[in-house]
Length: 395
Image (tube, rainbow, N blue to C red; front, side, top):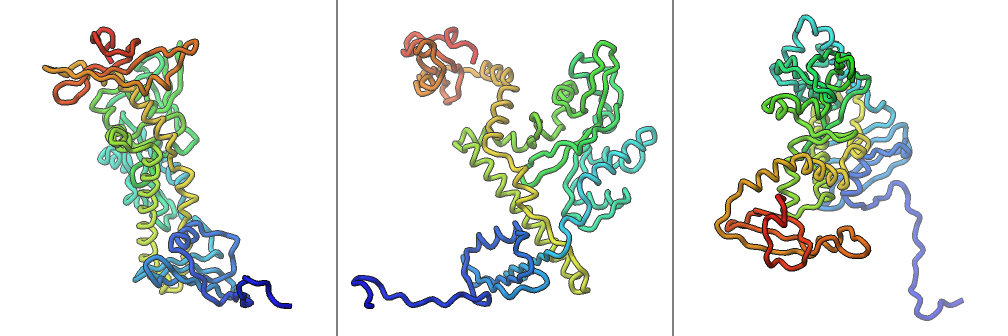
């Protein structure tokens, strides 16, 4: 039978063999590499860069092991499925060993306590493998370790904490908590925060709390409390460097979702740098025909701990509320020779209403000759005429 008019001639395609080449995007290759899917065991994939944005994959016949290789200049990653993942020291064992050593040195301070005093409580990632080796831990790869901050105000700063409930100073140690501590999200990587468990000796109180409790930290002198590196939420924590970046970036128009994506991008870059350093160091082991365990998956390690835009927004609101008194006092200190008044009606449209009527008519702002806010507040009427600072309040 003849073909219908207008139909294009179709040449029967030959079924693609596994030895033929398939072109994919470089982003997809990197995604497949870092995720390291388990279901594709027993196949060998060789990836060689051919252009700026594309690579070729040669998927060979199934063999005894699967090898993923990305060749670009002198950089080569290799992952083998038949070797165990995360075979080196885990953070749980490392932090547990640190806690046990600090407990042993409670009466007679030794090398670890002196090290924490000199470093102001920090165990940096570059020194973590040396500390772990001295603690008798089996350290194979230092890239698997994170930085740890041990909050010990009594040992490091010679300052005692107060009870966050009654304010009493009769506080004693109550051991360590069973959990690993708080995982703090920082600019380029995450680190762990841990501290002792304390107990108030007051008979009417008797509360037990962690040494990094926010109210307990605020009870310290200002020069000591400002050394605390994290802003704690209910179950998470954000590094103070990120918290300090929120207001200037949000004032410049950056959204919380964009800020969260920026953190994820910087974390992925740091993860890739460590993977490159690890691979270059392990080339010597491979030359000696020693097996090398695969590096961890970025998705498994970071994705679940990467903050979302909603979390960033909540931290921004909570932190702004915590320094509300300071912001109000700072506005009162501003002088003005000439004042400009302006009313905004966008905010009143989304505020709550009573019986269908808006509670406020306008958001009135007064700025000085430098364009800095002097007074800002809600006004019942929509008109800005005869507006006084008394009507607007203090902030």
